[in-house]
Image (tube, rainbow, N blue to C red; front, side, top):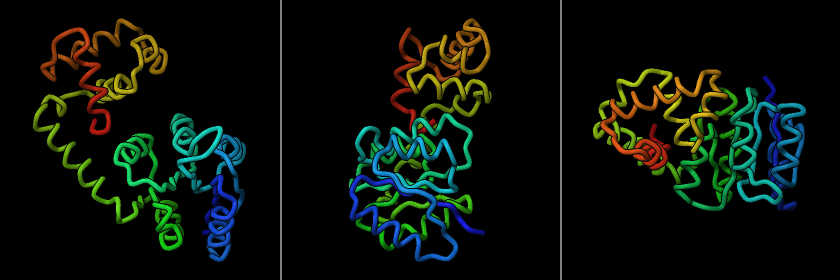
Length: 215
């Protein structure tokens, strides 16, 4: 199987080197390259590749912003983010958006081909130097479920609404997204709060926002 790849980075020399690495592999096909997140997004929407490599820091639209838009689309494209920063908050945000590859630029020469093949097969790839972020994320998720055992009792609908609340969406926005009434959303919110032992008008929003990477 030939994997179709799009590469986006605003630094011409780095992008050229990245493209050359991809083109050297018989099982990979470079189908496009972009110098901004906006350009990459337009190309992905027009003709979705199997894998899109997006630099986090790009003009007009960052790779993370492009990933956020794509997370709301039902596309076959798997996203790998490139970054110069060992930033745990950025990493968690990327994972929350469904990004399946996270590669540090300093390791790109060694890691990018491996990352493409792994994510194209349905797996995930994280540069070893930031693997601790995933460990801490998993540990915090386990701790949260111990602190709030009621999370295990949430229905699939309640879990989905809780994640929507974590994205700072109103009951009306959630209702429109799910095709249900605002009243039904409010009932779900009350049930979630009861199961989690939360009280107060803003306690559910605060809980969801603070723990959105672990829900």
